[in-house]
Image (cartoon, rainbow over all chains, first blue to last red; front, side, top):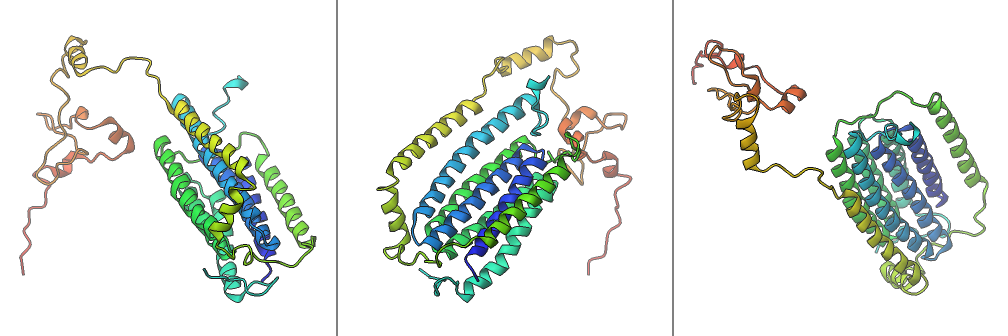
Length: 99
Length: 263
């Protein structure tokens, strides 16, 4: 098996995540799809780290995980705040600026 | 530490088996995450994808990242997701109506194009070198290798990221802080309101739920003297969920009193 197979899997996972962000309406599911995209990028980093034989890629993947954790914390707090005022976790309902 | 990659360029047979079993499952789980209607099911499938990715990391000579993936993602992040899901309501499933017309076909076409582009790009690209493998870099141990890089080359990004973490924690606290507009009513105030209110019907408190010989949980209403169910004796949210039982089935005349012979 070629190590590039991991890159194919990573590309597929990233695409699925991107579709999810566009198609799904529930803010929490949208968020999980963003996480999936970040994870797919991480898999690429780890695979390239192996292909190139140094650990820089793994360190970058580690940083990505930290940033993703921050993003989840702030994003979920925003979702809870929106839910508290609008009683809905749908991304379509938060359209107050449009009206 | 188990090094699964033995040959240079080609990975060893155990890893190939692992990949060809786990990668389709991961793909199906990710696709299912997109297609299932309930957010909780999406979260469970997401957890599976993350565990599978952790296994891939460990198989690729990144055991530290694999463990961190399990601890941070499946441990902390997914728990946070499920916690928030419970907070905003488990049954908040997606509405399947499109708000922007034609969004779904456009999204799927774009995704097929993007995915096809990425895959064909990867298939045509030459990596320019054979796969080196991280065995040499991991010679002193994976954690030691990462620590060495993290505290020498990447020490400034490391500090910045720590600042980011603190900022995110503070931001979440500020966002989640709930400022009460009205004072929370005290028990004394509630009691005064009950007696000074418009009617004295609930002055003594609401009736307790029904207590029957065969059933005495809160989901059965008590009976009024005329035999009808007392609506105020069961919680309104239980009624809204349709979890309230009819008290008539517990009436003495309806209860099956035939005794079965013990053998």
